[in-house]
Image (cartoon, rainbow, N blue to C red; front, side, top):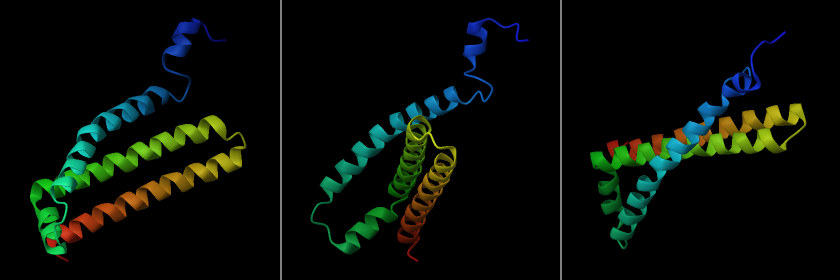
Length: 126
C-alpha cells in the first residue's frame, strides 16, 4: 500500500523519474540552438560567393570548427528527444514504438556522428 499523497507521487513523474530530465534537456538544447543557428546563418550569409577553398579555410578555423561540432551535437540530440516524445505520445503499439524509438535514436546518433566527422575531416585536412 502506498502511503504517499497524490502530490508526492506526481512530484517525480512516476517510477521512471525521467519526465523532467527530458523536458530540461529539450529546453537547454533549444536554448543553445538559437544563438548557434543565428551564428551559422549569419556566417553563411557573410561568406556568400566564397569558393570551395575559402569555405574549407573558414571551417578549419578553430572557433568555427568548435561551433559547428557543438551545433551538430545539440541539433541531433534535440531532434532525438523531440522525436522520442512524439513517438511515446502517439504510437500505441508497444513493438512498433520500441522499434521506432531504436531507429530514431540510431539515426540521430549516426547522422550526428557523420556530421561531426565530416567537419573534423574538413578542419584537419584529411
